[in-house]
Image (cartoon, rainbow, N blue to C red; front, side, top):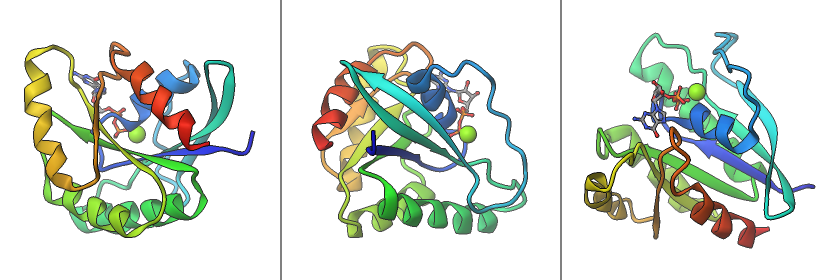
Amino acid sequence: MSNIVAIVGRPNVGKSTLYNRLTESRKAIVDDFSGVTRDRHYGIAEWVGRSFNVIDTGGYVANSDDVFEVAIREQVVIAIEEATCILFVVDVTTGITDLDDEIADILRKGKKPVFVVVNKVDNNAQQSDATEFYSLGLGDIYNISSMTGSGTGELLDEVIKTF
Ligand code: GDP
Ligand code: MG
């Protein structure tokens, strides 16, 4: 079970909600403010009989945008090194932000498969809003709602093809 799926993205896009859904570890994941680096949670997920590791990144110290940027950059670089594939989570309700663009730049230079996961697509009306994320230049987008679970099956079908 050596495959690793890393979840990256800026704060508040829903990374931990997705992680909890995938790992079904229903315990709350509370940011521990222990530091900006190596702040990761490891869990195990299963899809169509295949088990794999999932890493939730984040818990960034909420002091300033600068701290966010450095911490996120580090998490993305680590993910590119150690993950089999990367879930880059973005938020349909905010659209593309500068930080999203920065993360996309780093991911585009890495050689690992990246899935652009457009989260918070809770209803059909938001499906068309999500198309803006094609402009990140990372290929297909996967519209999901981590809250309801909608779209996660289609995403996982593609994720396990990278193993
Ligand atoms: P993280 O900082 O990226 O780990 O984000 P969290 O998982 O902590 O979620 C941030 C906020 O977004 C929380 O209030 C979640 O309840 C909310 N959220 C997460 N997923 C969804 C979703 O699919 N739809 C909606 N409407 N809200 C969501
Ligand atoms: Mg989180």
